[in-house]
Image 1: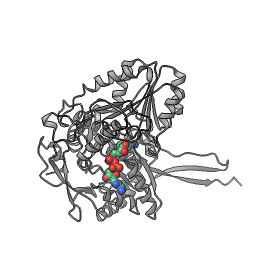
Image 2 (image 1 turned 90 degrees about the vertical axis):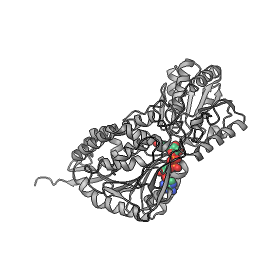
Image 3 (image 1 turned 180 degrees about the horizontal axis):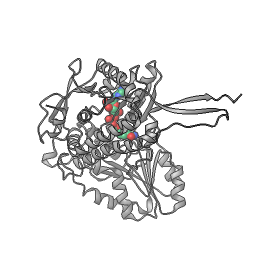
Image 4 (image 1 turned 60 degrees about the horizontal axis):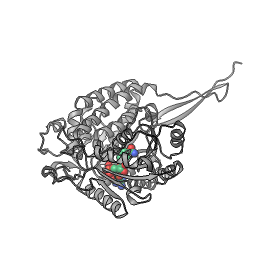
Length: 500
Ligand code: NAD
């Protein structure tokens, strides 16, 4: 059986063979035979048994990466881009199957996961298209010399992913890193580890062995990647708590490392009273990301800050629209929304709803698991809307990463901005207003790395995405800038002697 065959796993069946690590261009079992159960959150059934890497596996992967990287960098950007373009084509070709496996593995509806897998493949092709644009600069420091900078790869990168888009996040991380001439050691999320290993196998004959390594595993594997002395740069996506642990571990490793962190958010959607309630309601539902990923989205606008005058009408419509979302088994193409990634996470989400209600919030919709018989065994939660939420209540402050919208009203523009900024996070914000002064003033005043005005949810390629404050440090998706972020700038001065 090849890893590609896992994509043809019939619905309801589990993999008959263990899922290996991918080291040095081939499937590799963990040295210690460290194998873990990987279950489907929608059914609680076993999907596969997956190898977890330990320190010795990380060391093997880094050795392979170190050995392979100079030749990959020496190949030149045009050749690397051509190979990455073909890699992307192969991902696109099997995107519906990758999406289906991601849906079974992580619980999100296949409709959304297939679209996101397709985006992942296409992202490779976009990066391949812009990669030849990377260049250094010539600086006019003196009239008698050349003073230039050259972008050089770091060498071996450690990349760690969150669980919500297994295929897409892998593609988004590795494409610019590889285009820049680095080798990669990628650790996918422990809850949804299968597609990244399969994706690596799709490039078996395209990437020199060792250039892309995928080490499945949990916190221990991630920590071994972060602290390995030959990994000079870490790109991490995950929660604030883990991000802080990664930064601390990198610092304590005794080796100076570059660390970028894409972390969580508690993102506001601010609605001014001049907005058509129908348009406002559609924006609130779209921004909540209930339908796509069950609210398990870092950029979801899960905190509604709405002017008191239109709150009642907009929320009535939001409730009506939300109740149309079809919750169902993730591998059913008809489902709009699947389940949470684990049963523990489902319980955590419901715990936040309970806290919100005991803090004085009013339940407008959802707030419980669905009672359809075929969903009882899974980690499902109905999309939940709580209004009358006091600013400062836990449900309005903590990132829930689930299908929960907390609504708070305001009467004065400065009050809205103050509430929007009164959070430790600063990832995204969406502002809806027909008065251009108020809209742009608000966009300037909100402390977040990515702001939509009269728009929400969509991320535009080329527009760098990344958080302010405790939502992280560094940007992704900036295309050429994204590739350059995986390089170190070298300055070279060349003196030119005058004619004697
Ligand atoms: P998490 O922090 O629990 O785990 C993220 C990754 O870190 C996983 O691969 C995990 O195995 C690994 N890990 C855990 N402990 C580690 C350690 N000590 N050292 C190294 N690695 C370790 O996050 P999650 O639950 O997978 O994802 C949800 C979080 O990710 C949310 O906070 C969400 O907002 C955030 N997120 C952010 C973005 C973004 O672009 N800003 C995108 C997606 C998700």
